[in-house]
Length: 177
Length: 446
Image (tube, rainbow over all chains, first blue to last red; front, side, top):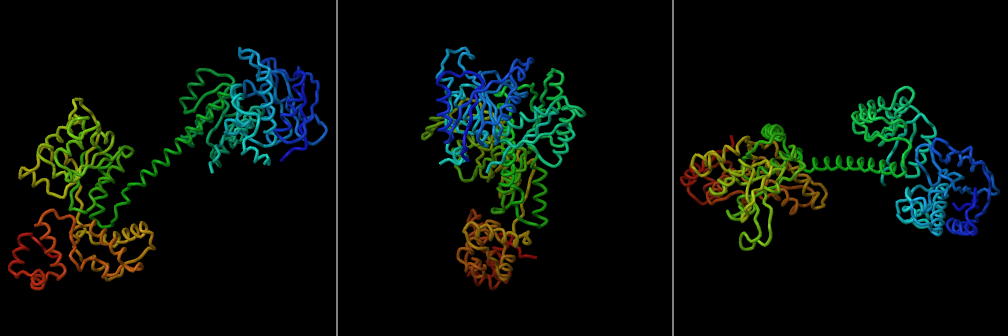
């Protein structure tokens, strides 16, 4: 089930060397080539003034409408507070067994929870979140293994508990040895 | 393989349906959606969903009305009412009408996960509870009592009528008639069936041992009492205590037992704290308690305390039509436990069993069938496999007189009450045999 490629489209600035590290981590998780792209989007039309958040459903549809080269998966990276109508917030969202996903590091930073900034931890969390959402595009559902990247996370502490890799069962479902 | 929990999402907003559908699918649930109550109810007619998430405000039928209809269909269904416009009034209404929970949209992701996890746990607990209840029912049901005779049907009717009450019961009947099985059937069909049935064989214990067994003891109460120990009355709390061979207990124990039955309170041997236990008492005896009371061997007050209901189990010789059924039951039981193919019994052997008086009752028949399966040819129980021709020591006899009575009756039956041939076989003269028949009140089958 390995994809021919994964395209990461960043809608914002994510640090100087981080995109390359991210590409390496995603590539080694899925054993495929990863392309990095930057894009600009007027986010105002995705903003919900009532909730003061950005509509994840609409952003996911927007990312899905972009047709980067190759037939692989796409994930859009944002730095805004995402929501879907039924939930107060989301870290990311994906089409289960589909092509596209989105993730945001807005709620992944320590500062948001009154703790000291930790860039290293923030990057680790974002990498895990991206691999998790991309895992959904491959049809993986949430995993019960506590260290598996596909474990459901509703708090950042949950994300810290898991690792940036798939458990053996999820690897098997992905067709990896 | 574990069956997936199914969730039905009912909401008129497509984005809500899609979001919840995706969220729950990613969590591994089986999800279906309906855009209004009417469609949801029609889906529920053809399929069962474990959890129903219903929006409160929907065009047409609202969530509360739908909740009432769903509960009318299945009172155990788990319905969670969602709303973007929460009010105390609607929340109270929803919960009064049986909603599992009432939540406000949008949810915190963690709250939603917890809500569904708790509902799922409730579903699995209810399912487990249902399975365990069925298992308990099947462990000891009245169906274990084999027989179609009027005599056994009368016993079953009595069991059914007495079981749901809290009354004390005395079960009387000869040894081997299945008194403990009847006690189990009463307990299994009572409201106490999920609590223990504690059996005590009073005849097997000395007075001091029985006292310690029934009331428990404190550490150091006597030599060898190394630990505190709960008594059988304490163990039977909320359940039933079965006192077998109640007629054998001493006068002192009769007084103590009477006090416990009246107060449901007792003190452990060597203790000083009063313990209360809520138990039902069932007793059994093969003696005639009433005549023991008349002779002063059993306390009258205790007799009346115990004898609220009396169930008498007739001896097997008075319900011979049950013998073929019992034979079949024991053949199945022992062939299965010995891992042997099912066998049958030859007509001559069955006929002989029907003529046999069975002084040891069903226990004797059971032992005979077990033995015949062990020694038999593995295809059919033959007459020669039955230990009828030889001396059959009846385990129920408790005295030399009992043994003599049972043995003389056995030989009399063997020779069809031909006095001369029986006397010859017993190596006594006819007068002695007549005297014995008179002494033991023996009578031939009419």
